[in-house]
Amino acid sequence: MGTIDFGQVAKSYARAREDIPVSLMDSLYIRGISFDGKKVADIGCGTGAFTRKLAMRKAEIVGIDPSRDLLQQAKELNRLKNYQIPYVEGTAESTRLEDSEMDIVTVMRAWHWFDRPKTLEEINRILKPGGSLIIIDSGFLTQSTFVQETLEILSHYVEGGLKPAGAKAESKQRINGFPIEWFQEWRTAGFELRDFYKLTYQVSFTPNQWIERIESTSWLAGMNEATRTIVLQELTDHHQVQESVTIPHECNVCILKLN
Image 1 (tube, one colour):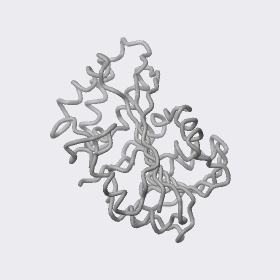
Image 2 (spheres, helix red, strand yellow):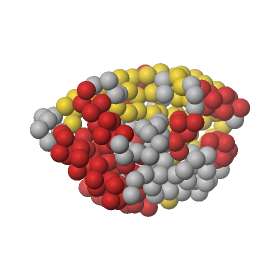
Image 3 (cartoon, helix red, strand yellow):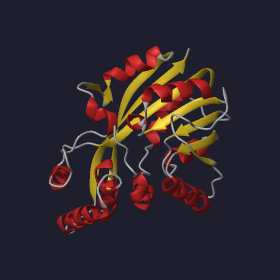
Image 4 (spheres, rainbow, N blue to C red):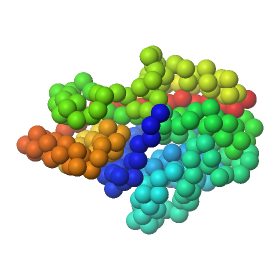
């Protein structure tokens, strides 16, 4: 599977990925997931949107990501928003954390980019016995005319078509957006599925905010700079007469516990 360098769109990524709903954090709490005082590793943390949500809930949180550009944005947001979250340049397969150190590992919008067998070995290594792994995915839904118009423009430029990101493109069947083979992989690696559920929520965008959201996708991050500039200009021209728009989103959550 090819990798995508989101560092090329780090500034847009930082601004566009703050759409994590309060309902997600509430849904974890009512399912008995408390982050207060827990040691948590957020793997594939990007610019730190989810790490900041966890820090607000008093987790002893560390963010892990291989992209220096994304981590630099996370650290800058630490400064601007008065957080002191540590960030480590590492991968899902090699986090550089200590053995049996973490109570919880979280992965937000990133599992499909990992070498999953190696990542599961690494999470087994860093989790305490009985620790939890929480895998979350979210994104905009495509039913609205506004989104369909955007995707039509993108379809002319994305080589191979608008496929799902990463490993999702390799799967022929998904449940709530999660490839069905992942569930067996988790079981084989010693993780028991405790809960699996879906949330819907709304996000409002100005035209500029929407274009930044699209710029932060793997479709545009995978383009060369010249093509990306052309696409962004076409999107700007198309949406410039639009007022703010509300886009339905979906969030899928899987809670697993290490046996």
